[in-house]
Image 1: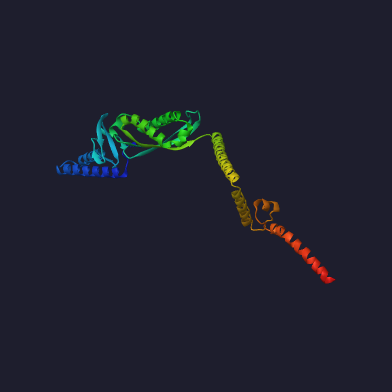
Image 2 (image 1 turned 90 degrees about the vertical axis):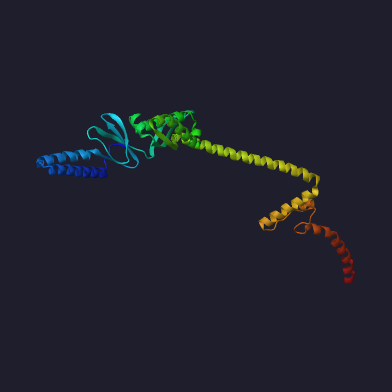
Length: 311
């Protein structure tokens, strides 16, 4: 709790010590004046209780709200301070450190009618302890209820995609909305952070399939665009090769060479292909064909000579 009555061991010890000192002092004075011993003891006891009740204590980060006969008397602390017993009372102490409050909204509809659960956390601090004590009955509960209301209102003004993608902006909007309301309570909102946006499992599965389909569509579009660009390049290359057949032959030879190098094996090329490329064949068939007439003539010349020698 941020508001509580002082209940600290150090406070109790200090109050008892002060009461004992006060009682001893008054009793000693009465004894020196010659008062009867029972009277001295009774007055000392009453004085000790009175002094002990008059000593109060708060920590460095706390402020004590002092009331006198039901009226606000002011703030006390930090440290030790004195009050008038019976007349004055410390209603509660207010913690002025930064506080964190977790809150959420369940089954709230977004602007596109999607039910979501949103968890958030608010960081706030009591800047004006007097206002926090007098303007609101329980500011802890007021902060939680106000934050939940503001969160529900913000969810209804945003689409699901905006909730997921713009958490920081949503937190800033909630901070401004809460500050306007809590300023009159003496409370300053430091920040509001959206921790999680939870959607139904069925909707999450549908969104996952939708995202997968969208990625596949994008991949196909990219592939189709690449195919179109390649086709245009092939058309341009065909036009260039049409006007330059020698370039086409060189390209064919290069493709043949690359295929042989990559495969790392012997490739038999049909003679018709080598003739169309106007290059010697890999097996030397074209060269042998050119030498065939000369070999036939030489054979015809040598044959009669061999026949005459035989005769």
